[in-house]
Amino acid sequence: MASHELTGPSTRPFTVGFDLDMTLIDSRPGIRAAYQELSAETGVWIDADLAVTRLGPPLEEEVAQWFPAERVQAMCERYRELYPTYAIEPTLVMPGARAAVAAVQEQGGRAIVVTAKHEPNAKLHLTHLGIEPDAVIGWLWAEAKAEALREYGASVYVGDHLGDIRGARAAGALSVAVPTGPCDAGELRAEGADVLLSDLTEFPGWLARHRAGRG
Image (cartoon, rainbow, N blue to C red; front, side, top):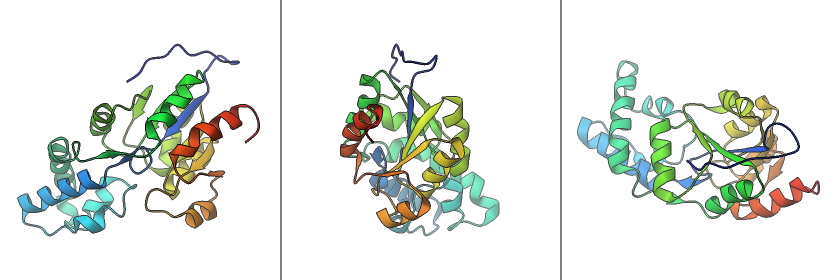
């Protein structure tokens, strides 16, 4: 990941956290392919098109929809093994994602990714797509994301899911939401997002205003 010399008015740089799936990356094509391969390998029907409409929560929640409880952990492990082969190449960068991360760093800040995804696979996505955050923290969902946000001193968290808003709130961070995933603008607003952008292309302008005390 990128390395930056960071300075600011306090001993810690300002830090912005980003969610990964459907915030920075459109992982639906890759996740669909990985589920289809798992289905073919196991002979168990998985509606991959349905599964990719529910991205955000931990993998275990989705796998439990298709496999009995005693097989969930093993199937999650196998899915994660298949993932690098089937899911990385088809995944797309979301509009404005690279510029959003760069905007934080260009202002002397630190951009981190906090995601529920298996951390090694998250890093593979970011490297493949040329997105260079300062740190990547995986395996955290909803309120648990506050652990990493607090550890890194993040004052802003950007995400597409209701769980991302809850994570920001639990960390005492400003919640910036984009309706680019499974939750629409009304749902994000009702959950209590502090800022609602149409997508990440609006983020650099918002950040500049926010840092100047105008937004």
